[in-house]
Image (tube, rainbow, N blue to C red; front, side):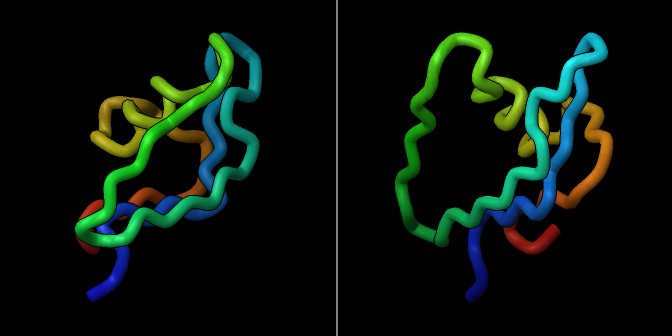
Length: 66
């Protein structure tokens, strides 16, 4: 089985600023993952992209292969 979450070259712009500049990430099935970082670092934006509520400039996000 592949990764539960697969992010490839994700680029997100918000308010004219690049928030995620080509992020690559994989989280394996059955794993627990935490996001740590400073305020404004893109944590919430990444989660919104994963659940499908964030408009992305380019790249792909797959959850459970979809």
